[in-house]
Length: 110
Length: 117
Image (cartoon, rainbow over all chains, first blue to last red; front, top):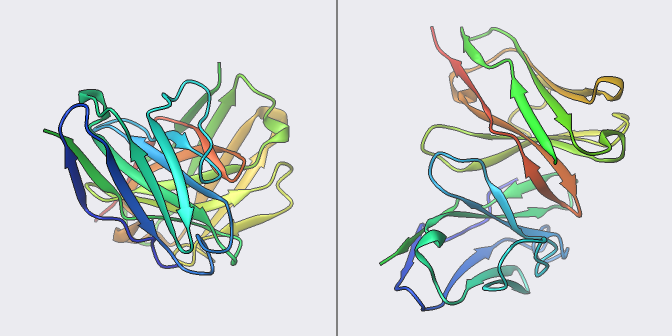
């Protein structure tokens, strides 16, 4: 049950696009299309942004998109806005029937 | 409106026990899996446990297996986490979350558990 690997931080200017990677193994990310992404502004509870690799819940802007290739999933935020500044976490279901989160990525809007 | 409200956190000594509750409203509780996730101060999210919709199937992270027990009382729309043999490293904000399509689509505001002498 090792944590998924995310970069500790990413940054971008308003209007730019940024991508956050999430690397797992063939026992989690690589085996299932059961990857989700969460946004957590400081001092608040996490919010679901992407489920099943690339699906957006109702109300999430289409600036947020997800994809997967092999053992690595990615979250892309297009047209970056100041309100996107937050911590982002990926998560995957695993072959051990448990879930695992990534270590989190701090997104800074310059 | 979906609402999840955790309670039961507090200060407990190492080796002690605590039971967390998560009161659910705004949806049909009996049809959803439910999860517990924790976050140590200044750290990332860590998945803890999951219950299926009727409580007959549960899974745990290795770090809590044998010490924590997830359960639910569907008649009261409430999820529980019984935590025994608590350690300093269990100190965290504990969130409950509704399971949907292999993700957690709604989260509570969390309850803080501090394990310290």
